[in-house]
Amino acid sequence: MTPPRPRAATINDVAALAGVSIATASKALNGRGQVRDETRRRVLVAAEELSFQPNALARSLISGQTRTVGLLTSDSVGRFGIPVLLGAEDAFGAGEMSVMLCDARGDSIREQHHLRTLLARRVDGLIVVGESTDPRPSISRNLPLPVVYAYAPSDDPDDVSFVPDDVEGAKLAVQHLVTLGRRRIAHVTGPTHYRAAQDRAEGTQAALAEAGLELVGGQPLFGVWSQRWGRQAAEIVLKHEVDAVMCGSDQIAAGFIEAARERGHRIPDDIAVVGYDNWEVLSAETRPPLTTIDMNLERLGRTAAQHLFAAIDGKATPGVHRMPCRLVIRESSLTGTV
Image 1: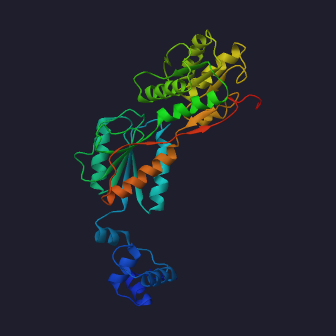
Image 2: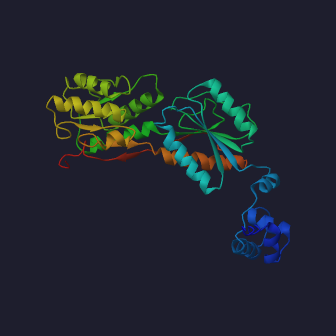
Image 3: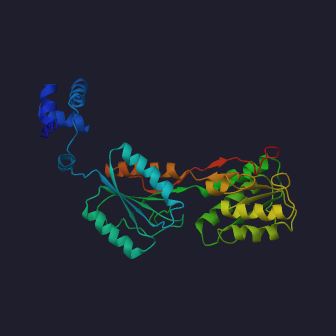
């Protein structure tokens, strides 16, 4: 015969063991209301001794919150969205929030369907993760809950958005090259209609201007985010006298390095190369390994989640918040390290 399961401890048991009322025990466990520190400690000790687990439904009825949030992504590939989502999930886990993940796959109809589903589940808030840093249409105006945008900012300045600071990231890359004594620097990047390509070109030119230098060729080379474009761009860049190239993505940088090596140029002795994104399947495996800019996307996701907590508590921080990037130095820029 199977022995009966032991009865789970209730808040009544915690209150009785701590010698307080049920209302006081509830306030102490939920961190709400005025409770003396000594009383709060006594309640927490009693809860731990009894292995008390709060009832999620009861807590939601008391607080008016479900302790559930939605993560809505449109990044069907996941190249940039997944690190953001992982960072957000870390923060939600630490805050004991349940997460519902929905992938709209870049489809506005699918996005509306997921929004209706999340609203029906009464989520307390929502993080919307984009597939590029181009502004996206706001969905906040008609929603009765806080929304935070990550990676792709909302086009409404009254919304809360977090994006990588690509202008400063590109400046970091060029300042690194200038510090190494490189003076003939070219810039190869992605399509002109991408905000990321525009921002990285702006940062590159600003850093060169600060150093009293001009861009090789006089202007950035805009193309596509691909190794093929990196190889094609090398044919153009190598017609000039050049000792460094700042590339707008790791894919472009990998293609450039491949073409430059085929033409007898030593990387980094003859030409130092810096990429962007720190996509480690490329940046760590390129020959030589690639110096690059890391957008700190997991940190961006964690920060977005923390600000969603604040928004749920009525403390939203409107505007586009630009998060710092970091330089990851590898052998493609430093001579004598291979």
